[in-house]
Image (cartoon, rainbow, N blue to C red; front, top):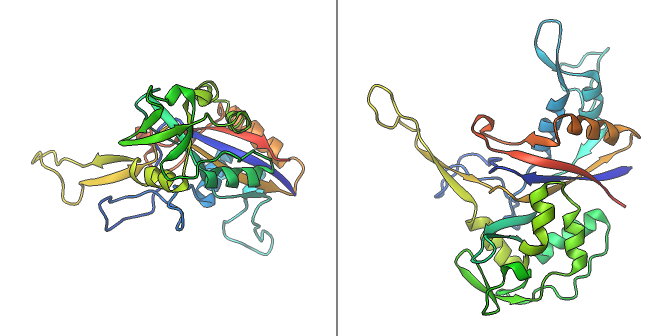
Length: 286
């Protein structure tokens, strides 16, 4: 089975919702149960990619093309003559690799952690040297562009112990993930590897919270039930998903279709208000 990595670098805030909540946030994003890291379900990603193969039929309705059905499956009414099938392209869940937070120096930082890096290395089947990963909860490997004169670094409201810069092997492996110029040219100056616990804290508490309401034109007050807040993963976050296929040319077809839309796709809610636009890249897996 052939395998490739699809990377998603958020250009705008992204909301793939978990539904209504009884907590402080009315509409939270989907998170892993055990880590609370934000994720993009494989079903959401599959639906977005499959929509790149929509075409109009004789009646003017949008339907999935024959090639799209081969890649992503056929889920319309099944008959004996047209039994349906699951599709030849297998799309995994998109996991979080790097998360942007405010930094007292360098404007912002991309944070990652040992767990995220080891997951990434496992999927990509590469050997990244982890000899100097942070051990204490408030210790981090910090790029020189983020360090304060005191030898510390300040991310959001936390001042942490800034150790050496992340190894060149880690920076090189991550820099190749996206062709987005912001990522490739800024990563070496903005990368910090923090502890798993601190990373979890930031991804839980440093997402954007957007307020929404609807005003009734006649009364000029908020409509009943229309005031709510929504959690969004910030722009400049890096996700990756593992794609697999048994067919020889599936990835070539997908890469060609992504190129045709400028390697930019929209995922999640609020497409008409600019959320969810991502730079995408397909990468080889050894």
